[in-house]
Length: 226
Image 1 (cartoon, rainbow, N blue to C red):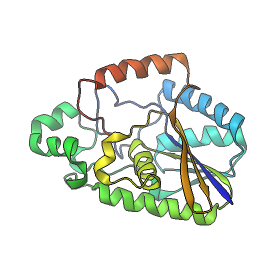
Image 2: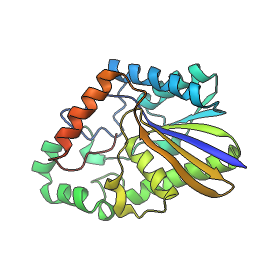
Image 3: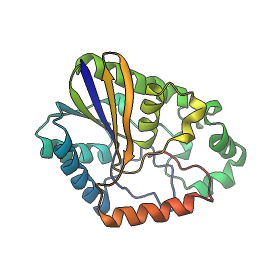
């Protein structure tokens, strides 16, 4: 039996520049984000016939999932365990604000995220437990089917890290761009990752903005989830 997970982050939203800890701020897709969702829906419909679309309850994910659902004719379901990590007191603050107000905690988040908890928020251990529950549910309820999962950067990291059997200290080694497509396959209970964060299907304007952002990241600290 083969179970296939088509994993992706939601489309573009406000708060990417200047970079903010978006977290559970329930913001909609931008015009660019909606264009990314349309292009991604078209790509998914070309390559797969998903049985269902599972999505985080956040508006940016629900909107992305709805576009894919319409293109593929597959039902969608909100899965609360796919929700973004809770940044607590840091939510919607910029990285500059946080590095100035909580310099030692910010350094810890950037260097040892597995030892860190957001003030009045979650830890990576909380995130990995929730996403692990989502993965177990998917493998039980959608066995031998293809399912699209629409989540956040942190959720995509957490799910992929579990499949690859990576420790939480590896959190910054993965990054998922808006509407990048990943593919995970379970043959029985044996998992393998077939593709990670593919963005070839996205509009040219998206690629240009991503290239600019990547250039900025090369000399900056790790990027938050979203």
